[in-house]
Length: 283
Image (cartoon, rainbow, N blue to C red; front, top):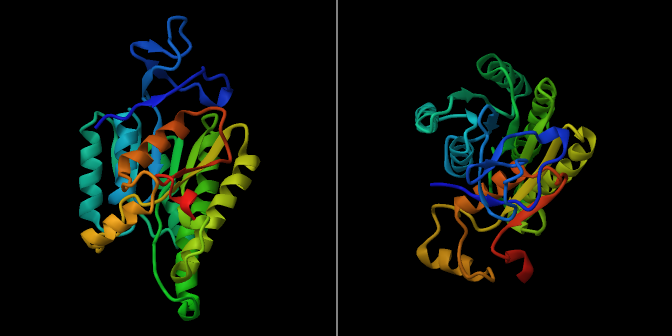
């Protein structure tokens, strides 16, 4: 699978002197042609994708590896899946290793970034993808349930951002992409804690983007019906697709393309890209 994005201008900021190519010409060369498909070149860059042993996080890690980045695969449980993911990424000719950490534990987050620095020596890209998606009626959400969702979906992303920013500053800056959700903009009664956590992540994106500029750019992506829960029936999936103006479900590649765009964009920060097939237009 090959991911391509479009560019219309050259990178000018000191935060993003990262090599990119248009055909065989590097961006910045006189022969480079704007508005042409390009292949992102992240050679010599290191990325950490939290929750990347499975599903969307794994697809994002794969997209970054195909672009040439060394990738740290984070996982909470499932050592075999994480090891397999790292091995698949190494097939692209990059370095990759799996790192275990319970991101609801601040001490384990600190350990994760210490191990990452020891192994890779630097960090250029962080994708905060790890999250849980739980359904509980509003009046039945317990304190423990609330804290579990908030601690992983929001607090962990904030603490990872802090650690990543300190590490990125050592090499001049970097890019952070938070994976939010259209639930940040909609009121889902059975998912109150999830919606609040993702709305908080969107605001955290804006605040950290302002605080960390100009060295570090922070953006978010809010997927809609992409990789829906596996327990849904074919009829339920079709109903979900019909809720979007595009009349289809999204794929992991749709989100990966958005991640690569934000990693390559040098004049976008504090923004949230909604990748939902237009679903929010119908609400």
